[in-house]
Length: 245
Image (cartoon, rainbow, N blue to C red; front, side):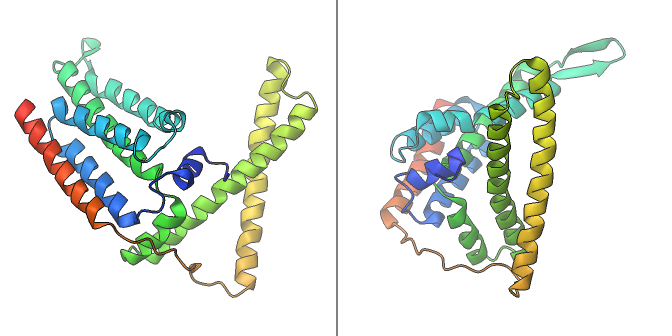
């Protein structure tokens, strides 16, 4: 267990042994379909396809997948409200095309988000980073992503340790104590994480690490059957959308 529910689900997924390129092709294809195809029924079909693949063949727990899309759903809702509300000299009101605009925004965003979560819950970050290097993504970008990923676990470990200490001292009993403990927890986690990140950087520099950290990636074979099924499935999705629309 890594401490990140999405990462744990990716490691335990039935699609974990599949090549990263195969899963990227599927997810990117679904995202493009979500952007290009009409909201009805294109976005609905794309979203359902991503959810069915994640919960079915990939065996991602439904609770984890639902929690993963919860925060993006909040951002989508906020964006939809700002898109359908207009401010004029007469005050605040609904835009003339509020229903169509809001529906299109929510539909495309939810379908594309589900497709991205399909990749996130089936592919660990440790598999994605070597794939980015092989795709000739600039090394600085890959290294920043790698460092950010490692710092997440530093934050989680610091958060868990400090909160356990506060709980043992009855720091979360009552509103006033909880409010005070939350502020102290935030400050302590940030300072401790910053200190540990600085020590990590100094340790790597002391070992002569002046470039990115190279590791031996696991070679995952590509499946022609999976690639063929992906292409045919995306084509069938587009055809069904055009027919129903």
